[in-house]
Length: 144
Image (cartoon, rainbow, N blue to C red; front, side, top):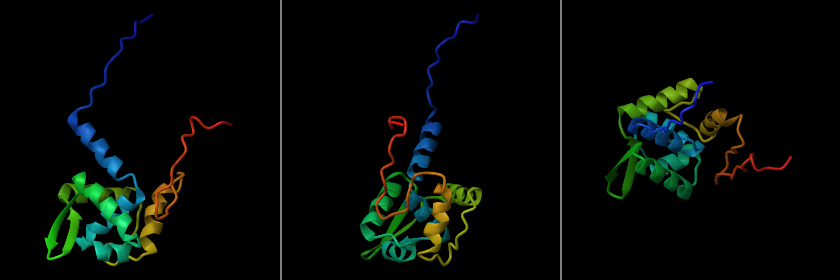
């Protein structure tokens, strides 16, 4: 019989960073925003109209993406424009859209096309696409 040794997993910084990026993208609104920004920078007002996300929710999710390093901004008078932070981020978002067959027109998105396209990714989950995120119950503690 072999004696089992207990190994301690120590994630390398790159793995920790990658896990953080995927955590940021795990919300449908944040993923939709990033897919929308593949076509170039956009203001909050334009995204509110194009994506159909109310301004308070949109601002909250944009802040999370910006603080996480996925988005960059530029200010022009009172208008703030958001864009994907760099070419690596854009390449990753484009790859995600390709892998999950998210077909959306990034040049002329519509309010109905984007939520439907992004929700394709979440069809097998308990996440519903609403203005406010839903709380998913922990199934490990649910009684049968």
